[in-house]
Every structure is written in C-alpha cells, then in structure tokens.
Length: 224
Image (cartoon, rainbow, N blue to C red; front, side):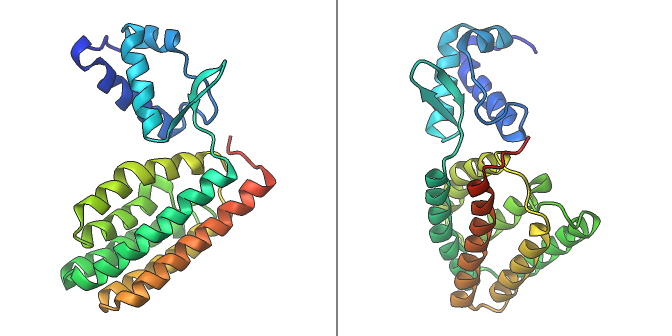
C-alpha cells in the first residue's frame, strides 16, 4: 500500500487494521507485531502503538504479557457480558423506536426486512450477518429511537465487538431464518406502536441469539 502521511499515520493505520480485523483478514488470536505493521504501512513504530492502543480501547485488540498485541479472543465470560449489555440497550432502543418513530420509518423497516428475506431464501442455511444485514436492522432501530448517544454506542462500540466475536465461531445452521422471523415480529410491534411488546421481543431475540452462540462457545468451535 502507499506510505501513510505522518500526521494522519495512526488514524489511517487504525482504520485499515479495524477493517482487516472485522473482515476476518486478520484472524482472532493473530499477533499484531509492531515491526511488521510498521514495515507494511511505511511508518515508525510510534503510530503503530497508537493505533493498537485505540483498537484495544475499542475492544478489538488485547495486550498479553510476553506476547504483545493480538486480535482479541473472547472468553465465554466476555461474550456473556457483551450480550447482557446488548439486551439492556437494545430493548430500550426498540421501546423508544415504537414510541417515537413515524409510520414512514416503521414501514421502511418492514421494507428492509423484505430485502433480508430474499437473501435468507437464497441461502437458507446461512447466517444473518452476511453483508452486515443483522447490524443494518439493529442500527435502523437505534436511529428510530432518536437517541444519538445510544445509536453511536451501539454502532461504534458494541457492534464491532459483536462482529469480532462472531468471527470466532461457526454459523449455527438455520439461525438466519429464526432471526428473520424474530426481526419481523419486532418490526410489527414497532409499526403498531406497542413499545412494551417491542422491548420484550427485542430482549427475547437477543437472548435467543446468545443461546445459539453459547452452544458454539461451549463446544469450542472456532470459525476458520
């Protein structure tokens, strides 16, 4: 790649490494050596350290004694904590979306799910996370909740960690179809303005997703 300008070195480096991690080009557990990265980006080790610290703060990189930086590997406790936070935040997002969104926004959410249904029909055994479709649905609801702080917390901090966690494990066969049905029920509740039902269905959806993932964590089935 082209050398990075010094003034923007760490931010450009951080952005590219984030993309590599979330796309799976750099796998969970893979070491992130300062010297190879400095050579790759044609920068000194200082910007590399800054970028790695930023990614560590975002929950995507961990530092281990005598090893250094590596792409984060989530323990079962890490994953449980992530999903508990997700359930708390997103149930409120669904509740506020049902209260605050207008009918046009709600119908747009239904239309988004129609597109997702076509994708699931074409790949019935696949995961919902293909092409970011799961995140699309949840981010749209966060936007409909009309709380920018919540939206940014979910989109910028929680969802990237969730995407990395999913990289560690194989897809659960048929989970995409189940998730789609759950999404459709949530969207119907939002369209009808039923805030408590929307919140309840969102919490149940995330708990269902956690149970599916937990089964993978318990058998130790990392995604290759």
